[in-house]
Amino acid sequence: MIIKEQASLKNSFAINSRSKYLITIESEDCLDNLENFLSKNPGKVLVLSEGTNVILPEFYDGVVITTSCNHINKISNAEVKVGSAVNWHYFVNWCIDNDYYGIENLSLIPGSLGAAPIQNIGAYGVEVGTFIKSVRFYDFKDQAIKVFNSSDCKFSYRNSIFKNMDILILEITFEFNKTGLNLSYKSIEEYIKYNNIDSSNLNQRQLAEIVQEIRKARLPDPSLIPNVGSFFKNPLVEIDSISLSSFSLDDLIIWESDSSLVKVGAARLIELIKDQIPNNPNISLHANHALVIVNLGNASQKDVTDYADLIKNKVYKTFNIELELEPSIIKS
Image 1 (tube, rainbow, N blue to C red):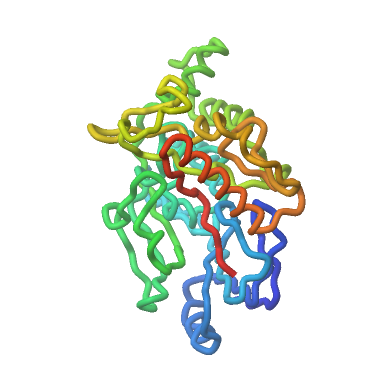
Image 2: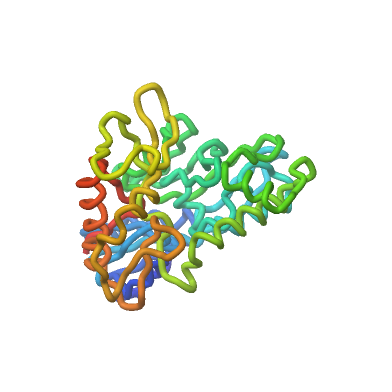
């Protein structure tokens, strides 16, 4: 176990953030020492890895915990156990190289494996929860290591049971089925058609490259333009509840969800009202994607939350639709 004081915190929004303590767990054998440290240093605890889906404060007055568990173990032709510190995009490439099918659509998503089940990350018609067999984690409340199977995790759209738990994810077991590629997402279909690609001959690597090209065209690289990806979830609403006083349904992007609710494209909602959002010298919407808020160089957490609130309020007043934040706002 490695302990640092007044440590700088890595985060993809590039907020200059530090914490009172930063602890790195190198293996499960460190957990007893971690319990002892936390008992002697009571206070707030934050689990953080690559910081790709959080907006941090300038100073976190508590203990930040991360892991360096980066193993990848083949269990069978369908099953793999992976440490929580493994970079997600690295793992996608590893799966392609080792002939495990299914998550190539999730290529280039930033962050680590540990964050994947918490957010139930998804993109281009695929969600990670579909491939998770079990999650091994440390429960701070009970001070015990636990294992949840897929049904225990309660995966749903960008959500899981872990969002309401104080845990440190240690290892994830994936179960893959060797099936065909998922090409059904609209932007993938359009890319294939526009580039005259024979979809019947596509392999995993080629599909991953297509997904990466689509992402790069719309989403900025956090290492070049600090951001946390999509800032708002696509809301689920009753279609009759949408206010149409300023725009028509034809102006919106709507997907059928179930018999009573529809999913509305949050990016389109923001595009329609973004000209009414005041400029901020430290923060803005990305030019190619209205769901992405970017750091122009010196943004604080308050800059981000104030700007997001302006967008939420304007969308609500215009469409009677409440937007929900995708990243977590970490209090100091």
